[in-house]
Image 1: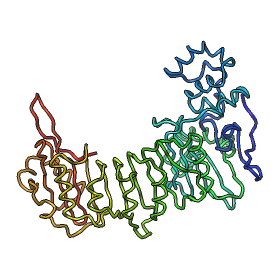
Image 2: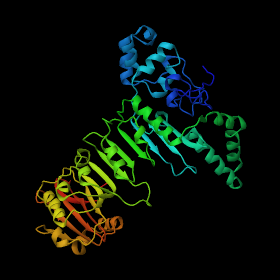
Image 3: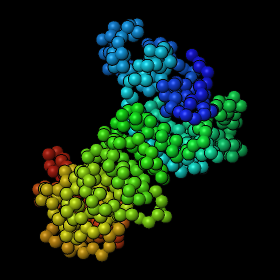
Image 4: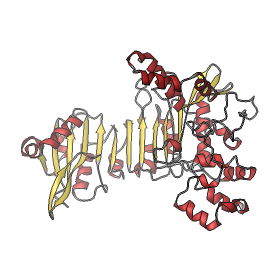
Length: 453
């Protein structure tokens, strides 16, 4: 059921050129650069309901409505309930069956699990790559991945898979003298003139616009399609156009990774997150920029204080009080003013059974001139240099390789002596790791030492 190429129009502007029958087939997703999975090429469009993918929920629905032969008799609510269980590609294929199917698909909310927006450094030209994941299963069939790049005043958009195929082909050309004949024939067949022409048709040109803004606009339209209820978001581009963003909140987000070189960008993203986050990661975009400091008032936000895991590759101005009230069981940041006494209280809380549940590790970087005696005052510990290192040589070896520690001690729980922490000190870092874990063998308890994941 082939359909001629469409011209996708931008509101108030001239048509966008370069569309093809597989990349931008349907009007209801045209503004999203929507299409069948790029490897499909439109040749395998299913012609009947019986061929569509089903799961257990879908099977129950089929039985309830009396089979798909009664599909056209269903009211809108029932039709939408069925479409909710369709994979993304199957929705697209249903949407071209009839005008009514088109409206049903268009009106049914679409679940998006995660969106990645990044400057892909593996691509040899400036770009923004956008990946939309419909599930967390890693399947290529549940992912859209496009590359946005600037070509003069225009933006070029192409499938990531097409770029990768061409890149592999050109790499083969450079090494063809080392290839066997069968490999040569395979590549020659794959990259015939007709195949290259098909790839060229799958490139889209957006007239008179900035590739960075168009990439973000595309990604945010997918966010809007799922009511901004995605679970994960990964942002690693310079100059995210926050002034033009449609994001008001990300109510169901659990994991965010974003790059920033200034505090205000960090603040903007934090304000969009729910109070209870699982993972927050902040990375610097450029090592040439001066390292900024996250102020104490921003760190007091519930999104940070209640997060289960966070990593900040910049300075964080936590006070001792904030440090002691963190809910995270794993975190890392460049320390500004946490004191030796604050570290002592943090360890003491854990020793007495009052620490964070399921604690794994705390890494305080960029700190020097620490007083070991103050950090361990009133705490019993066992030096690694001596019997402990002899008893656990492999564990100690791996730990030293990982953290390049200058001094390590083992600190045992007063609640359960089979549980313990490792306090590690190096030239510019203090880290605390939950390394001793209680195990049983034939009913007898013992301690297993390992580095937390």
